Each structure stands twice: as C-alpha cells, then as structure tokens.
Image (cartoon, rainbow, N blue to C red; front, side):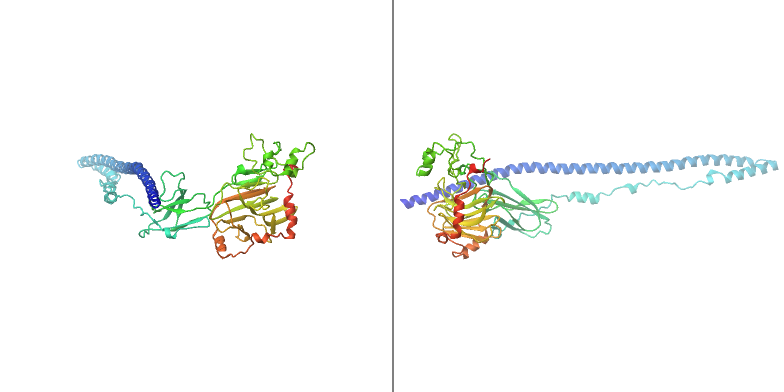
Length: 526
C-alpha cells in the first residue's frame, strides 16, 4: 500500500511538472504568435517605408534628369535661334547687294560704273554672309541624355529580402559557472564568413527549465561580441538560475536567437535581519552601522521577564537611587514601538542574518569600515541570548577584530580565544560547511586561510555580526570560490579548531577582559 502510494505521488509530481511545462509552452506559443503579428506588421511598414524612399529617390532623379534635358533643349534652341537670326539678316543684306550689283551692270557711264563697282566690292568684303559659319552650332541629337535602365532594372528585379545568419547553438557542455562568473560558449551550425558580431542576452530567474515568457526579469543585452565565447564577471547570484540566448549579426541584419539555455547559479543569499539588530545598530541596504543615538531617549528599564534568570539585572531594576553603571544598563524601545528590536540589548551589539544555514556549503564576505573600532563575524545558533556576545558562549563562533586602545585579532568561542598571527584583511570571507561541521575564515582578497573551527552543528545556524563604533558591509549571493574549494579538499585540520582554543592563551586574557568592557552607549553620548 505504501509503495503504491509513493509511486502514485511520484506520478502526480511528474504530471504536475509536465502540466507546468505545458502551461509555459502554451504561453510561449501565444507570445510568439502575437509577436509574429506585431513583427509582420512592422516589417511591412519598414518595407513600405523603403519603397517609398526608393520612389522618392526615383522621382528626384527623374526631376533632376528632366531638368537637365530641358536645359539642354533651351541651350541648343538659343544657339540655333541666334544663328538663324544672324543668317536671315545676312541673307537679306546679300540679296540687297546682289540686286544692286545686277543694276550696276546696266550703267553705261564709265565713271558711274567704276564708282558702283568699287562700292559693290567694298560691300562684299564687309558682307555678313561671307563672315558667317555655315555650320549649326548645335545638333538635333539628344541621345546623350537618354538613360539605360537595364542594369537598374536587373538590380530591382533581383531585389530580395536581406540574408540573415542562422541561429547559433549554445554548447551547454562548454559553459562554466564558477567564482560568480559565467562563461557562455556557442557555435554556428554552418560556417558563415559574413558574420560580423554576436549579441548575447541573459536574465536571472528562479525557474528551472526553458525561459518563461512572464518572468519578472528583463533580458540584459551585451552587443558587439566578436568571438564565440563570452564571460560575465562580477555577478551576484541572487537567483537560482540564469537564462542565456545569443544571435549572430552580419552587416545587414541580426539572425534568429539560439535555443535558450538555463544555467544554475545557486548561492547563499541573505541580508542583515533588521528586526534582530541591537537598538544602537542601523541596518540598511546590506550594511550595518553603529548608531550611538539609536536608543537615546527611550525607556531603559528592563522588564522582569527579560531578566529572568539574571539576578544581577533584577537587582539593578530594583535600585531606587543612584545612577546604574552604563555598562550594565539595557537600552530598549518602548513596548509600543520597539517591535522585535529588543532581540539584543546591553553590550550585545549584535545583528543576525535573516536566513538560516541547515545544510550544504556556503560563502559570504564582510568588509568593515576603515575606522571601525571593533567588530566580530561568525555563526550562532538562533537561541543566542539577548545579552550574549559573539564568541563568549558555546553556541557562537567568530573572529573578532579590536582596533580600540590596543589592537587584537582573535578567533573566539565559548569565552575562549586564540590570537591570529596574521594581518587583519580589508575584507573577510566566511565559509561554512554545515554537514562537515566546519567554519573557516579567509582573507577575501587572496583567499588566505585565517582560522578554522571544527564542530558538530546540532541545529541550524545563522550568520552573526557584532559591530561597535563603525560599520560592516555584507556581500552575499557568492559561490564558494574555487580557491576555497580546492583548499578545503586538501586541508586536513590546519588552521585551528575548537580544541585549539579550549585553553586560552595567557596573552589573550587581556583581550578577553577588554572585550568584556566595551564602552556602553550612554558613555559615548554627549
């Protein structure tokens, strides 16, 4: 019965997954169908615009060439008309001279005849008819203004749609996700020497499988890629997966998209839990900062239920006169406004992460402000007491940096400490292997191991932070760096463990004492 039920549940899960795939596919088909209509309308509009532009160019060329023909006609007509006028005038003069010469032949008086002959000779010498060119200055030929459209007609008859490249193929086996970088590799189904560049598009998603049409994220575009491989660097993996697609472009147009692929980009994502922060810590946008004014003016009395089991605080509450030591005074909001902000009080300047670690390997980084006086970074169980300080209980593990009065850098757990004989890095990487019970701290820049705790976690843990007079910036959504993974494979207990600080180093006792005596909020206020 149980086996049949399990089998049926597996069938139901398979059917549910298939139904989800079909829903996504139907949405994709509907979206594609709608885009076909939209894109078809667009290309028709573009085609009409191109033809209108061509018509306009032809009209302009026609008008220009017609104008040239008319100008040539006017020029030739003007030349010939001038010649015609001059020739007509010369003919009229010649006819008059001819008539005068014929009349002179009949003159009988020798003197008169000689005089007339001389006049005729002089007039003939000066006659326009003998000075005119008897060749037309222009011909009637206009063939030099004719146009042969055979080539253009052939080009137009051969007009085709633009040749576009085929869709590339993403080589899934060659794609690499490592160190918050993604390398995508693709190839063309057939060699195409006319490809000019590629366009790679990607988007983050929390859905496995084919990209969904109705995804919250938009496609990010990377243009002008000249090779068939591209690496996206400096990514924050704040989603479980990323979709990728690529298209090839020649000088004319872009081709179809490749089939999209989905790559897994899981990482440990969390933020500071502002509801758990001490009143004197201000949490916003992935950072936490010391705020000495955070609890000023608010009710500083500690409720009896909050101090149950703490006789010292009960006695303080019952004091009727005198000013309590600032070190022992809890600052909390009034019941109407504080909400959960009394999660940590007193000197426990602590804020927790908003996500628990229950299994697996995880990594995150913390960067302190340059002038931060004191801070701790580590892990804690959720049952950490409201007055507990990181490293001073058996349910917290941390490394602590002190830059006030005397500098120290130590690993702390269960009120015991071990000095770390390495420089304090600008940024600290935290590695947690829950299943193996390992917590390691690294220099985030060069991945130098700073310290390792080894234990057996008995319940989920949560990232924990302490900060005083300064601030911390958190970077999550990081994969475990390959350098850390490699080190963890070869590391055999190096770098310290729980037992390494079971007996505090005498040189650390001063640091522990100092850590106990961080100045209170009130002592720092004006």
